[in-house]
Length: 318
Ligand SMILES: [Zn+2]
Image 1 (cartoon, rainbow, N blue to C red):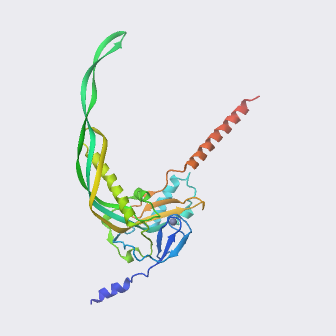
Image 2: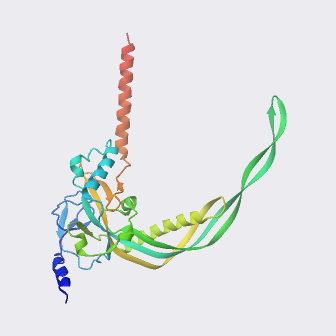
Image 3: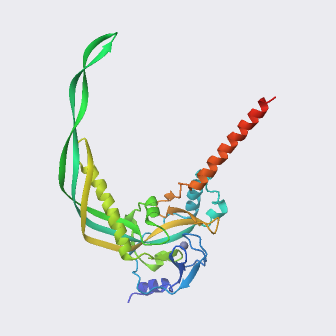
């Protein structure tokens, strides 16, 4: 056997299976690599318990390596934080440094979708019509061009490929949040190798395959709806509906790189979380602030105006 091969095997020993922690709050399963974290990276909950590694979990087939460094992630999340300063004072500079790089378990889904659709298609045409109006006190007849729409029914069949949809396999990071920082450039996918992820936090899939397949089909259906909308002829359409079937489905477990910053200013409240794509640095955080905070903000403004009005009234009083 050539010595080079022996050397490479010796240089890359398979890492001993790390400790697996299960978050008591969000249900994420974190494999501790070099980290000795005792809080969940997704929800900042300290209620993590050690559990033995599940033997029947699928191994990732591919992994997408991190290309965004921690410094870059801290800088980008910092910019987001400065924009959102008013409502997210909990993200101080110190906490941004606690951002964690996680290899998020996900599934890569592809299938052929076939749909039967129906819709009402509108074609515009112009018509000249005469009308009467009053000008300088006289009734006159004028003509004008009006646009009208003729509607007809359309039904048909449409087939397409749903390729490379990525859905989360983590209970810690919902699919809606992952979608905010997609897409990933999947051309950089590499065959999974434990050495690729060593030193990072890695999560095992904590959602079942059937749950993830269902999510992927929902995403495939949404995409097909967009394709059909773009495909409709005519000037406008309405009442588009379709039924869809899928075949030749493939769904492979993969790991995608995500930077996560979860902080919990109040232990009784859910964590506030900012995520960044570990490949493109796209940042997303909860820009929709809670109704309570908006109400407090409005109450504060109203109170301020009331005080000003009170001062003004008193100023005028004899
Ligand atoms: Zn958690």
